[in-house]
Length: 292
Image (tube, rainbow, N blue to C red):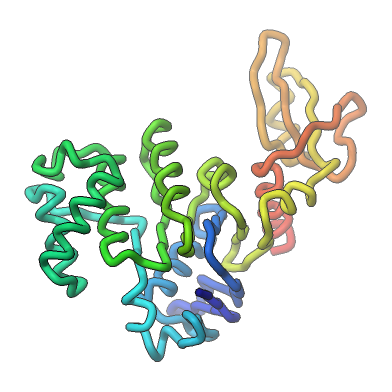
């Protein structure tokens, strides 16, 4: 099982580039596509889901070009788009039966699959409740269920935790982790905590380009010795942010404890800190913006 993204570009009318030669070679596991809003993540997700075509480059699923042979991937694809909508008057069973029919699944196996999926996403007790009364997290779990109807080998989820409360976000992350197994799970997000605990590999993307692609441990090693902590007065914080990359700030009674990512000691009393994944992410994104 292999998904190859080879020098994929996407150009919109007016010469606007959404993707600038993205290349990734993916196998089973959870891959976090991490980047700010507008980085090109959703564009890449739509291309992988065969919703749109690249302007240049190609995507291969087990060697088959998905632009020329989209059905080879669509049969084994599960896709949860960023803007996932439901029919508010339908209950989860009715909605999933509708999606199963649209995917061409046989009725009896589909019903058994729906029962199993509702139990998997913890919605069995609300299977007859109208979707219009569901919370954001419950709707996202319905979205995961519809993406899993055909037992996909490639699961693509785009910003699945957007708008969820912390408890729902943790629950959804655990669910995606449980689903990885022998499939490729591609999770697109701008929230570092969504991927740091579950991703086996992280690709940082900004300005339509992949800036880094490695295991979380490797990304952390790249910012070793570049994280610092020190305290400043509250009125100094704004000026500090203009001079340095501040990755965190905690207000205290005696001022503000700040965390800065820098190649050299930013101020004389700065103390080295253990780097975090957010430090690595901001380091790559900020350098890319400066270069641009």
